Amino acid sequence: MTLQSREVTWNRGGKLVVDGVTLRPRPGQTIGLLGPNGSGKSSLIRLLCGAVKPTTGVVTLDDESLAALPRRTAARTIATVTQHADTVVDLTVRDIVALGRIPHRGAFGGNRTADAEAVTEALARTGLADKANELWHRLSGGERQRVHIARALAQQPRELLLDEPTNHLDIRYQLELLRLLTQLPVTTVVALHDLNLAAMFCDAVLVLKDGRAVASGPPAEVLTPALIAEVYEVDAHVTVDGSTGRPLIVFRPGA
Amino acid sequence: MTLSPTTTAPAPEHRGRARLRFLGVSAAAVAVLVASIGTAITLGPADVSLVNVRDILLNHLAGAEIPVRVAKEAIVWEDRLPRALVAAACGAGLGLCGLILQSLLRNPLADPYVLGISSGASTGAVVVAILGVGAGGLGLPGGAFIGSLVSFAVVLAIARLTGGGDDKLILAGIAVTQLFSALTSFVIFAFADSDATRGVMFWLLGSLEGVRWNGVVLCGLAALAGVVLCLLRAHVLDAFAFGDDVAASLGVHVKRERAVLITATALLTATMVSIVGAVGFVGLVLPHAARFLAGPLHLRLVPLTALIGAAFMVWVDAVSRVAFSPSPLPIGVTTALVGVPAFIAIMFRRRRTV
Image 1 (cartoon, each protein chain N blue to C red):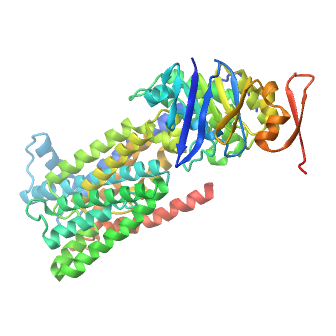
Image 2 (tube, rainbow over the protein chains, first blue to last red; image 1 turned 180 degrees about the horizontal axis):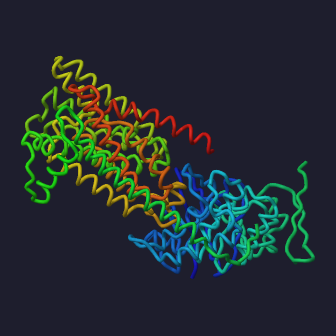
Image 3 (cartoon, rainbow over the protein chains, first blue to last red; image 1 turned 180 degrees about the vertical axis):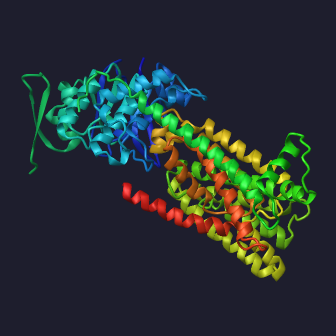
């Protein structure tokens, strides 16, 4: 069950940006997508959310092909937070979060009470309750990121896909955001740059290089100096954090 | 910020106030529209009072038999009323076209002109009027209608061949607008005598001269269809605020919705332009006025844009008729004279708020 990919490839203009990636999260897990710039993290997320169809292989939602599902049905289960989503429209925070209710509406409206509750809860969970009437263009980068996450939460998804959601956030908000994601009763696939954050919060990580999955499993097993050297081409020292039992990665300046 | 699973009470008083405000603004807009049509009918060389207008309308619509002079009756029922109604329908329709394009292309400066639709209409009309192509069966409106669809198809083809994307669509629109304007001028320059030129030029700048009830039916139905479609698609238009990817993640079938909405825009614009000629700035400016009053969500924006657009065009036509009476001013001239300062005011306001 859940949202899975089986041997998906995406040939974008003659380049294999995703090459035979299989991802099978268990329900409720938080999966970190790791890999250097251009390794295919964002592309894999675009495949998983159904924005593009795989060239070969298949993305399935509860064992049904995602490509065969109506978009709106899929959007009731899968929410996505992309990078760089901006607008010229003078929307308030509440307006934007309410966009998350669109998949739950019929042609002539929806359940107003349920909509209002979902929006209020999403605002509260992301700490935006007192910013509900602020305009988008007055928000800081970090606040905008939280608004998008609140919008995704208002969709009340079972599967949550996030493409580098900690960008623009200071360290406190990065930690709070990832803690929230791990506490939500949803399956989360999150592309991350920071290996220590991934080690701290993810149940499992999938490491990509040149579109291919080079390693997957619990962070403690995957994030070894050898793998980091192979994938990121940097020298790293990995210890175990005594208080959490999680890997702790220290980078060494290159020669 | 605390990212916690606690919830706080919603703010119902805020939402209630917003709804009340919207209802108030809508009611006012309806009243202004009705008053505008009524007043516009009284304006002009022949003296007609509001009481006359009321009596004539009652005679025709409610079967009353109030004595009114035949000349006044003819002026109101055969000329000024259909004219005002066509103006209202065109204003509503062109306003909605601008609204759809601004939302879909995420560009506050988009309007039917941007996609080359209006310039194609001009070329089509000129080809029929001056070259006499299909003049018998087609007529000027038919030529304008076909011309606008052709220019729009060319815009889509260029945008697709160059890789797609909203920026490509707008650039293709600019190129095609220039191309069809040049074609129009070429046909006029090469083939028209001075009489034909004057007739066509007037039409190119927009005119409601000689509009009758069949025009009212056509424009009215087109505008109504536009309003209904936009209301049914209000949430889809909202979802495009953050671009195609976010819209897709909200369950919008992006390609299909885009195709439906842009085709509808082209058909609606082509219909309006085929009746009244090329009228600019209505689609560009009026959605901004409506946003100022109703906020950015389309369920409110759509009806208000239509109402404001209708009232605006009624006044534009009335002013055009009266200002240099007895010779009428092309309405495209009036919309530009009013529209450009309004447009600059919008840009000024945006600059201050950002």
